[in-house]
Length: 387
Image 1 (cartoon, helix red, strand yellow):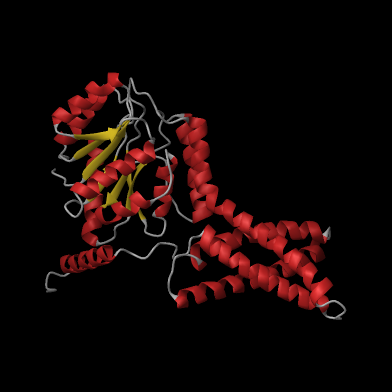
Image 2 (cartoon, helix red, strand yellow; image 1 turned 180 degrees about the vertical axis):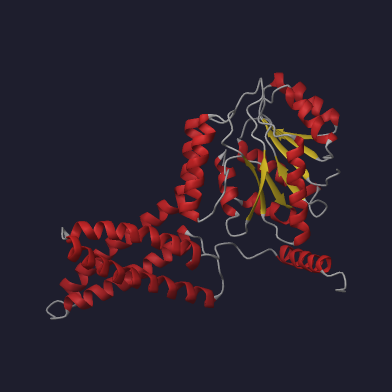
């Protein structure tokens, strides 16, 4: 099977078996293979010379810059030489070589995505329950699945494989994704949350004999986890900051602005909450969810939903604390802490999934045109009589 998908493989000190792997990919029908030498040692240069003689394109960095930089270099090369002439990119690993037959499955799915106008990220999903799976891959895979589901509402069976099929019209988007090292792969995956995923089963590949893994378990794992939690951490900081502002403004309104007024507490509470909620909305919008809509209607809609959610949180908190205290007794303060903590997580998911759901920049006009053409082609395939 011939495929016009372009394979991009970052490689740092690849094992000798990498040459036969590239040869096998070419025999499977992949003739456009870009290998990114990410600052490998000079004694590994013969490996790159051999894959270049096979017909692969070798580009790279004079010094090691990490997985994220190597992928971006490959993506930029693709945009310069293959954009609009290919289904897209398939990313693979030099030290963990999934079988060529599975790469063919990813290429087929990538082609179908292009034809149907879906443009979702094709994700190679390994079976992590096999007997050859390392403890790290098994345990970390379980943790990542849970975090993706809890924080983003996304169900991915294997978020760490790093084997992707990226549609042609999404490659430029991937170049713009922030992140470095292996955390870039996580950032790239998360950036497709609103676009969608298509999971394709691939076989689990252990490290090749002679491979020198560039993945450092402790520091790279911490960076990956920080990438996932970054948005939630920012959300927590803005919420705490808004609460502190609420207390400060309440003190100013009750002791200065409305001093001596019998309704000072009520007025102070309302005014302080309006100010703190407004600040919280702006910080959450711009620094947590990066809501980019230029439409005044969308901004008004998100602001209204945010304030409605804030009001509903207050009501639910008051009702829940009153109900629990009436049923089981105990400290109202302690109950409120537990209730508000649960509401905090619920509020995050609602804001993330519904209120600030359009957190992508506006589509490139080129993307919109090509997607329209793809949908028209898909409609013609479904009904040949459509002209």
